[in-house]
Image (cartoon, rainbow, N blue to C red; front, top):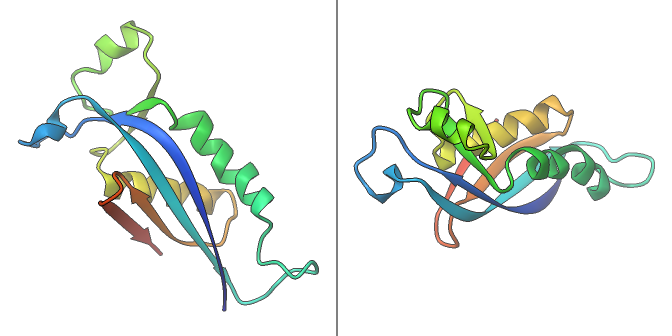
Length: 133
């Protein structure tokens, strides 16, 4: 089994609904997604996947959709105000926890044909959530 890993750093904001702690308020993170790709065979270049292909497929998607955006749940009551203000948003159907953002990135990598088996989202330098196949 071959395995490659790529780290993608990005900045995002969010807030958690139904939560009593500090994260119930709008706030931001300097996050890092760590994608683990796996496969049994190498291509004719001797690669599982070219890191440039990972960049084109998922790093660019993260930069275009999640980087410097507020990731919020579609039921968040602050959405109309933020939309009216023209804020950069990415809306998901669940609470934007680190676990759900890791799953979001995992599923997008799968849709883009990457052999992803795991995504870790480091929300801080000490805390991460993992989603795997």
